[in-house]
Image 1: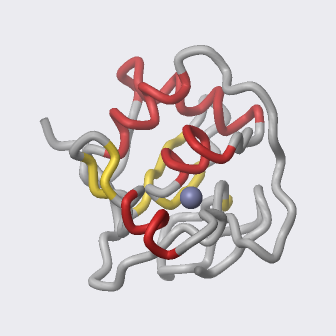
Image 2: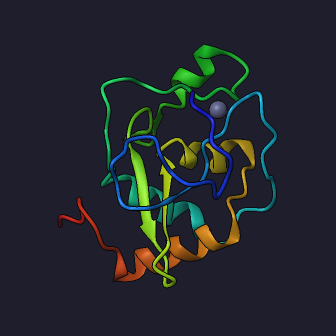
Length: 136
Ligand SMILES: [Zn+2]
């Protein structure tokens, strides 16, 4: 799928509010790995339940060894991860845009998102989330 470097300006589905890319991983680019911050994954999954920018196309994970394996990971405990994005805004008013597959990247490929993104996720899930799709 389309690759964007972490914290590069988001431009995938313009026009949108300014945002920075996180988690647009590709098999052709190295990515940051490390221990997952405690509690990050459940919060990402929570945000993934209300995705933004859901497209008709389906993105498969390029990091999985086979397309079959990638296909199985499109469904994560009932969450469909193949389309859509997670948008979070941190306390510094910076917005981040990540593909839903970031849930799978963190859970299964050891991806460690930038610290400022993790901070924004923790802030967002504690009730300060803003923007379209906030819903329930
Ligand atoms: Zn994968």
